[in-house]
Length: 181
Image 1 (cartoon, helix red, strand yellow):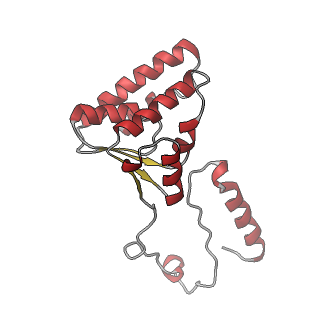
Image 2: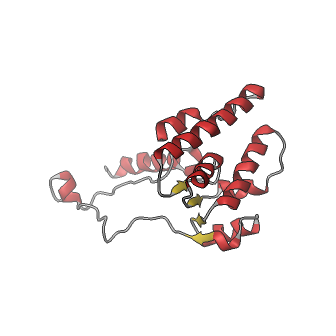
């Protein structure tokens, strides 16, 4: 399903061509998900939820969406053009059709309800790592010797400027001047 969905989303294509491409993409994505026949459809963001929620409805299976922030804050945007209308429609449909809306923090859950998502559907679901199951190897295992004194730099997030990846790289370079890692 993923390769088709990723290549069929017409982000920002202008005019009538963009409109036609958008509606074709939704139909194609919905068909791809329906043909995959999952027992549950999970939408990673509330945006672009028309296809997934429609396929879930067609199949009679639960539709769950995880709200990360953008999809919460865009919910209250004014409709100014075709793309903000498409976003508003997707977010409204997400709230209406979702069996459950998973907010990634308590604060975001409150914002989601304040901006119109149904309170009875919103649940907090913190994302993280089960450190009882996933435990890192020691530095000596990784580097073939006792090197526990060396710092390790880790960045977790999308490779986007707003996520701070440039800051992590800059900090790593600065640290490497005085302490190799």
